[in-house]
Image (cartoon, rainbow, N blue to C red; front, side):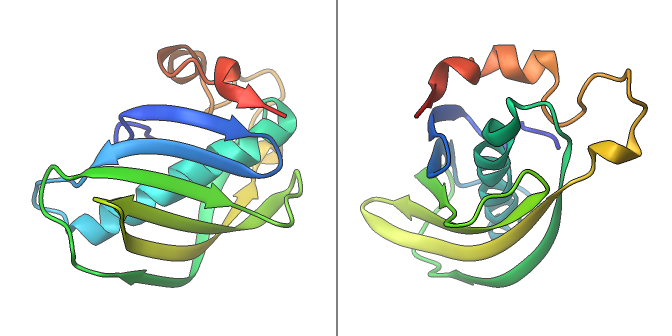
Length: 143
């Protein structure tokens, strides 16, 4: 995963929720596509905390997604992802983005673990050292 879409990791409550912050993208790709990826990346941190960020994850499926359209470029986005049924091998995640105290996006996403596809000695791709250090991820995990 590329994590450049997120500006800040607010916190990860192990087994319950992950919260991040970003801004509505202003570019050639539709904001809805990028917001979906932001929700998946935030969910990746929630799932990653279950295995101390040692597994690689892929974004597999969008079961449903909705967008209000009530946002403009550079609005601050508060992203929260929860799951009632996390498993080390994957999870269905419920995500919500709020901006200006309004829900602007919601989705249900599936992420899966794929570490078994990499060489056993290789460093994790999803949660590589540069990412973990840049966002101080481990320091933001509670619970």
